[in-house]
Structure formats: C-alpha cells, structure tokens
Amino acid sequence: MHEIGTPNLMVSTLWLLLHTVVTWMEHLWRLLRRCRKALHHIQPFGTALESYRMKQSQQYVKSQLQTVSKIPTHLVVLLGPEEPDYQRLSQFIYWSHAAGIAYVSFYDHNGTIKRNHEQIKRCVVDAPIEDKERIVWADEKQNAMDGAKNSSKRRCTLVSFLSPEDGKQGLVSLSRSIGESVRRRDLFPSDVSIEFLDSRLQATSGYVPDPDLAVYFGEVCSTYGLLPWQIRLTEFLQLEWCLADSNEQHFVNCLLRFAKCEQRLGT
Image (cartoon, rainbow, N blue to C red):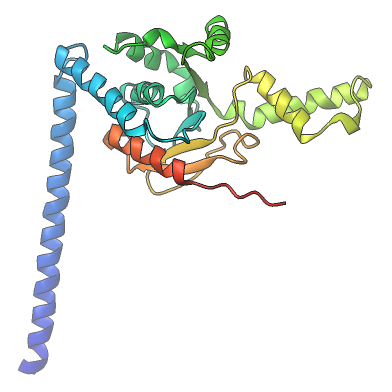
C-alpha cells in the first residue's frame, strides 16, 4: 500500500504545483494589463510624449514596409464580441496611412461603430499627427470625391464605417432594383452578370474597391455578416488576441503575412 500511494502523492503534488504556477501567472498577466491600461489613461493624449510616440509608431510602420511590394488596397478592421475602443481603432487609420493603404473600413455586427463613428473622427482630429488633411471620410461625400480625385496626385486614405445593413440588405435592395428594371424592360436578364453586379455594388459604395484584407481579434475567425458579396477574395488574418493589446508591431507583422499570401483561383 505504501508503494502504491507514493506515486499518487507525487502526481498530486506536481499537479498542485503546476496549478499554483499557472494561477499566479494568470494573476501577474492581468496585473500587467491593468498597469498598462492605467498608464495609457494617465498619459494625456495631447502631450509631447504622446505625440512623439504616435509619430514614432508611424515611422516604424513606414520603415518596416518600405520594401514590401504587396500592400492591401482596402483593409477592414473587423470586431466580433469585443467592445469598440475608439481611440485604439483610430490608430489603425494612422498606421494604414503610413503603410500606403488607400481604403480603411471598420465593421462590427451590431453597427455600434457606424452609429458612433464621430468618436473615431474626434480622435483623429485631436491626434498630434501629420498629414491629417489626407485622411478623408466616406460619409462626407465631397471629401470622399476629392480624396478619390486626388489619390493619383497625393496619397490619401479614405475611411468608411460599415454595418450589416451594408451587406445583405444592400444585396436585397440591389436585387429588387434589378428585378424592377427587368420587369419594366429597362434591363434584360442577359445583361445581368458578375461584372454588372460588381459595378452596381461599387456605385452604391462610392466606388470603393472590394476588401483584400480583413483583420480580426481572438481565436474565432468569423465574417459576422461582413459584405457577403465583396469578400470573395478577401484574406482574413488574426491581428492579436484582443483589441486592447494590439500595437503597430502586430499591424506590421499582419501586413507582412498578407504580402506572402498567394491567391490561387480555379479555372
């Protein structure tokens, strides 16, 4: 009995020790995250130190991607169950502009970001960064058109805010419109093609190209209803475990992974 009980006691002791170590590591990790958030909120957004940090993050993105030949044209930042952090989300605009990404969109399946998009705008307006005049907003039609016209002359970044209504509901509305046109004989069924649908959908979105990269947070990769027609060729890549932990290094690493992706279309 003594010989049988000794191994069991050792195994129990090892499991207890392992459980204690893991528990303390979890507590330490939570403490570090809280300290990081506290320091982030204590530091005024408009201070010289914060301005220096933001400019350095933009310079980091530029320096790391200057030799990369494949940069996404349209990036979508996709949120799932996490709550939007508008200040952190606004950083993706600065980083994308530094990387040379022409279109950035934000999407969540509840439509929270689109309803509160003015908060992201406010963060950009208050941010101590350069080239803010080259960040244009899709909901401001004149600015969006000016940004599209000037894209060949100077590098601009057009920012859009998407919700589920822009996806399935947009397809439903377009289908009804096409059906009515066919019924009135303004359009023939033979005229309806993939290219025709693409052009009509792009017209409704202000001729914004389809997303070629969507970044998400956490382990679950889900579209959450994001633009079901326009994401046929979109790469979905995990950025970080959560939005609060994302930084410019994660952003650059994600773009470097995208640059290595090869799309193989069937014939």
